[in-house]
Image (cartoon, rainbow over all chains, first blue to last red; front, side):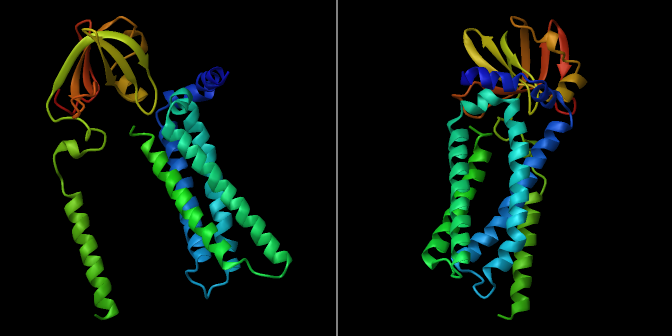
Length: 158
Length: 129
């Protein structure tokens, strides 16, 4: 069933148009990279702040600007990423590197959700997040997203 | 060390490194050819399968029983060379000129020029092949 789904995606008119294009495919590829760059460039300072760098700057000052930017980057990266996936769906689905990347991506999302929940809970109790939680979440985020990027690049080499 | 001279030193080191790394080297430092050898290479075989489209096309050739993967161009590059899909039919005999993988165990090459039914299709006219 998965085989048929992947074949269906690959043989779609959209995937075909991307494969056969001159400029669109490279631009979609570039869009994915811009999304990734924007996302990682925004989330890395947030993670460092969570770990404790720039402790004098209130966390909310950092997140207010960078979390929306990271979100925008993520939306771009995922949208263009799905388009790229469609052009060679079966081939990517056969790559263990790709699946490992998807796993780390999922863990990255889970980590972000845990952070948001913990942050909201602390706010509601007029408290601040425990240091151990902050540091763990920040460190996990850095490690996971770096891993996603590394694997994303390796898919093209092996 | 004063802060300004420290940054000047860092800047200088960075500029020096950039100049060294960006200095022109052999054409095989060019992106996309680095994994292949420098010598011209050719094989002749029958097409087993073809997959065209971005990021680049590829075909599998049966070369005396061995399967070789031959990378061909992006859609625009193939089109420019006159290499149409119907020329790359299953069973067609093709001679591929180009560069093979530097890894002797890997049967992979990147084609510069294809010869099909006596006609030349040059994917990289500015490269010798």
